[in-house]
Length: 436
Image (tube, rainbow, N blue to C red; front, side, top):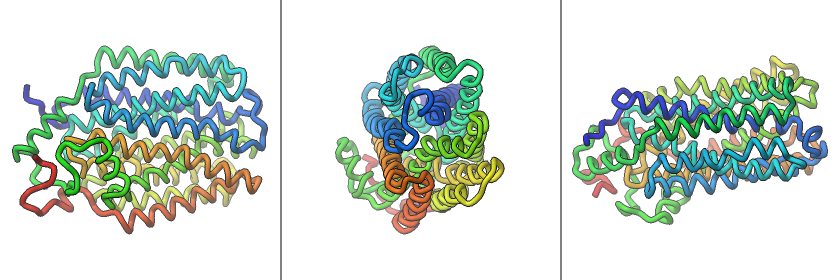
């Protein structure tokens, strides 16, 4: 069979994968507004227990990071679709656990399962779309992927806040969660195709020198053509300075998302906003992030990945800092929108940069390991901002911790990273690495 690459050539399957990532976003989004805001009244978390409040995000980040690592390698052995199905099966108990939860420990346990679900499903929707699209469409592909996912996150936050008001927090989350998760299971089984053959066809074309691309990527040279898991992990984590710079930036940018998840609802709720208003402000962040990626991913296909990634780190951090410098729904919404714009610049393009210089033979593993470090940032970031708030007794300290971290990480990326787009910075050698 001739496996053609490109969005147009695989439009139907591409749209099915976009629907999947929308459902993935809806699943995590249902836990991001109602649960933190009502942690004290509904689940018995003391108002000043910042570390206890962050515990469920720490658990989520660690578990999701590990599952990303496993998902990439597993998908190269058993296929993308089976891993996706497994991820949705793991999500089924989550709405029931939150509905029944007699204490906060049940919420933490449900979030562990959410981490498993997100690590398996979001990784596969991303990898599958990269399998079937062309190198020149990689920025657009990642932009559309993250657009769909984070629009889902934002919509879920708004819808569940409304359902919590109408049905109650637990019943609202139960109904919403079951509808989303069961729909995803049915759609995956019936309409999603296995995309691993496309990745193998691309690798074969590279090996024979018949790749459709005229500009070859600057693949790392210090790795074998069929590397072990440890080889890819070492390359992503420290052996290649470009991949290290991208991995650390991915890790630190999740500090922002941990902050939005844990302390934005708490901070805004304490400032007197209603639950619906809290959901709307946080929704501005998610919708700006999601919608802007329709343009920022495509932008990087034209001007490259490096500049949008660095700019995004700094703009996002500035938005976090501005939250502390004013009052009112309009100010907080504009600050959230600025952070969302920064995330839109960096989020799809960090992943696209990793994909640019990861050979098809081990791209699934590389994306999984990048996502391991990135989503471990949830856990490290939540712990850091929880400690900052704990030792100062002020929620605001968590915001400053995140803003300064983004500034520093962006500087590291600017210094150690480079342009990865093959058209703008191609491999000039006669024998590209890892092509055998």
